[in-house]
Length: 77
Image 1 (cartoon, helix red, strand yellow):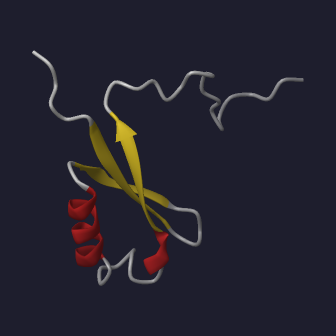
Image 2 (cartoon, helix red, strand yellow):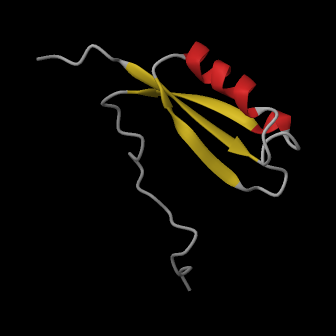
């Protein structure tokens, strides 16, 4: 059986202090925009209303084709 959903919309927020909050994965961009409107007045979001981001993610796509670098991994000497 083939999956009918081809993409999802990742909604997240980055504050001026670079705090990142993953809000969720939504089935449409319109739903993500609706959630942004709801969150604009809430603590943690109202002080940085321009921090919302919506990223389109394709189902089944490999987003780590070059590997992953952790900020916690020791640096090469």
